[in-house]
Every structure is written in structure tokens, then in C-alpha cells.
Length: 286
Image 1: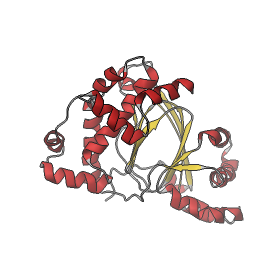
Image 2: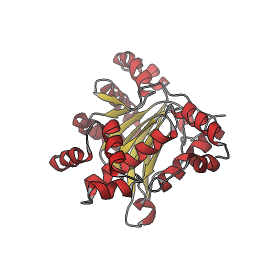
Image 3: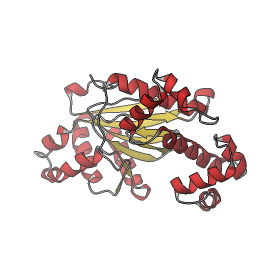
Image 4: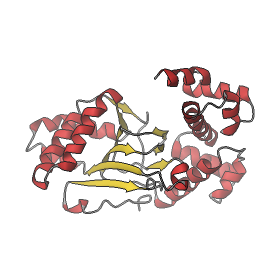
């Protein structure tokens, strides 16, 4: 049985399905499905977890996600707290065989077998090229049912010509339902408690495991240690604060759970490749 299987409505009767999410926040359970998923984030910000990848998402970003890879878009905490905030996303779900069957209509699609393989690692559309794809996605949603198939195939063809950034450097594996629920519990716990000290025994208790077993389990399924994952969460939140507040670097370090400034600066440079001050200047310049 697959992990937290997410059933795409009516996709069994067609090669693709269109979905608009207009909600207070994104569906927040780690899940997977056999269809590829092309998602345009119209409104909303938060954390994308895709296999062993963790990063932020924001408006006007476009992602292509592969078949049966665990993933979740988690909205920022304020989306759960403020009624005035909402998310909006437009997604196209399509079966891998859409490309193969589509070759009868567009022989050029035979060149896109590589896209199917690359999508397994998750892909983010280059910001400079996303506007053209956003326009095409919007056209698919506006089209009448008779012309949608052709427009969807043209969109996929355009994807194959577009510069794409892999989210993960390693191929992903689908997971069982029990594994998915355990990982989801760990992710949720971490996102709710990253701002304070977290002991390994404490997070292991969340999934009813001892410390050693949890460490092995987490690394096996995410290809990183829990400490590495926790630091990625903390640094992502720190980057958000650098971008959206005037808090000092020291204040931000303690706000996201680091117990001293030197450790924060060292970890930030190790993971991000630059210092918090350089990152803030870059954000201000942009």
C-alpha cells in the first residue's frame, strides 16, 4: 500500500486533470500519487518538502513533481491563524503515458521521455522562464474541454525546452502509508517547535521509537540526519525573517532556535554558502 495515497478526482477516466486550490492553507499531509503534478503557486508562501528536498515556495513559482514521490506544500504558520490570508494554486495532474500516447498527435513528444525521468527528482522552473509557462497554464484552464488536451500537450512540450532546476540530487523512492504518517508527524512536530531546543529523544517519542532506531529510520527515508533537517528548517525561517523584518541577525538566530550567534553564523554559511548579512543585502538589492 502506498504512503498517504492522494486520489486525483476523475483522473482514472482521462489522461489529465485540472485542479484549483483556493483555500485558507494548502493540504498539509505528506502524500504521493502516480500522476505527475505541474503546480503554479498563484498566492501563498511556505515550505515545500519533496522527497529529501526542503525549501520555500512563494507566489508565481512553478514546480513539476514526479510520480509517487512523497511531497507536501505546507503554508506558513500565519495562514492557519489569520482569516484574511488564503492560498491559490492551479495544478495539472497527468499520467506518464499522456506523453507516450500524445506522440500520435505530436511526434515531437517522443523527445520528452527524459522529462519524465527528470521529473522524478522534482523540478522548479527557472524564474526567468516561468512567466511564459504561467501564461500557458492559465490558457489550459481557460480553454474549452475539446482543446484542452492539445494545449496540455503543447505545454508539456514547452516544459521540455525550458531550463529546470532539480529539487533533489538523488532519485526518490515511494514509501508505505505507515512510513508516510511517521514522517509527516516528524515534519509537523519540527515545524511547530523549531524555535526552541529539541532533543532527539523528544522527537523519537513522537513516532514511538527509541533514539537510535529513530536516527536510522529518519536517515534511511530522507537521506539526511535529523539535525541536518532541523537546521534546514531553522535557516529557511531565518531567511524569511531576514527578508521580511528588521530584526538583528542575533535576534533572528535566537528566534529560530539557535542557542548562540557563532553557531548560527557557522551553520548558515555551511548550508547557504554565504553569511546572514550578505543574504540580507542580497534580498534588499533584489
